[in-house]
Length: 227
Image (cartoon, rainbow, N blue to C red; front, side, top):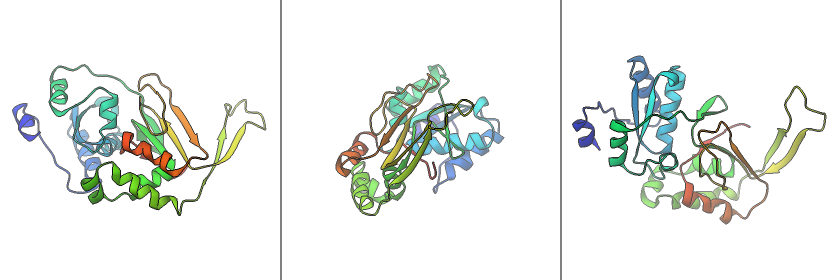
């Protein structure tokens, strides 16, 4: 990756610890960078977008993706399949304007979740991911499931201006999944360019079935701390 970046005369900035990508993105916005490539997985992309959002620079900056993460779900959803292709797209690709969601004040590009799968994402050890890949999420999930308390969910099903008294849907749920892209845990076929989201609420499901989705779509999520 570094060799190709040097050949293309791109400046490379590396992260040393969690959250560095947010700072680097904000620094790039301060330097009036117009093309910023996020090299990593879905978490790196999330941090880069968050940094640009905090710098109020999303409208002025094109974000590219170089897929080197565990799952690379967002990259696959947008047609970026490998590093070489990613650099080719940097040179000759056309920009796309995609939908961007906001959860708990933070933007998300791919999907966001609350519940057991969110807790699993945040609690999975990075060293375990290095050794086991996506299987690390499943192992952590089974441990988390024994202590997890169900979410209390209340959703308004009508616009606030016209909502009748009985328009609030209430339930206890294992997890909530909001998808912006073609693939995300729990299923769904959302389109990142249609200004709509795909919402899935899982009330009951065997733990092994719920967590098996991590093998296909792991590391693609933005966890919502509060719904």
